Amino acid sequence: MGTVAENREAVESRIAVAARRAGRDPAGVTLVAVSKLIPVERVREGIAAGLRVLGENYVQEARTKIAELGRGVAWHLVGHLQANKAKHAVELFDLIHSLDSVELALELDRQAERRGRAEVPVLVQLSLAGEATKSGVSEQALLPLLKAIVPLRHVSVQGLMTMPPYVEDPEASRPFFRALRELRERVEKEGIERVTMAHLSMGMSHDFEVAIEEGATLIRVGTAIFGPRPA
Image (cartoon, rainbow, N blue to C red; front, top):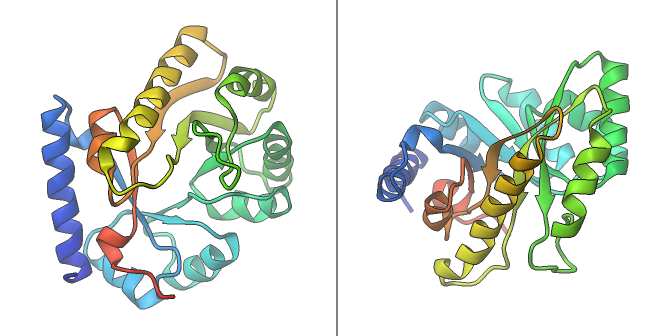
């Protein structure tokens, strides 16, 4: 692996190639650099190299890093969020990728009200492979969840997220990415009040180019930027 700056440049180049191959503007794809378990100094190096959106999996780790690194970049929560951590998530994150229940939406809404935050942007996480080890709602539960969120004043649904089963071949992820894009199109046709489908969060270090070809607007890339995570 090179320096973080070199890695970022290489990833941005691959983003541009994949986007143009799909007839898309590369500017429509945002790199979320996932800094889970990465030491603060290496994350600082990434910020100096031009990273503008950082993704964290754990609320407590994010609190520590944000306290040290500040808010000169956007911070996204890309990991599972427990309802008892909602108050901290409301305070810390610019976008939550992992809404997966009405109960969590209700708690985010309550905590936003208490803390004077007008809007908490979220993506709904889909479990398209039905893996027991991963969070997310089923395809069948998506529309009922979205309609249940409509009355909540402080929760703003802005798209969908998914995480396919990991396999070495990036092409194996394509059916899941395509399914998420098709779900977005179905939701858009429903015209649900206060629900927008601006974003598809999908694709990681090994398969983000396929995700871009299928319409990803947010790609979550960790090891290709920061190198292998500490054990």
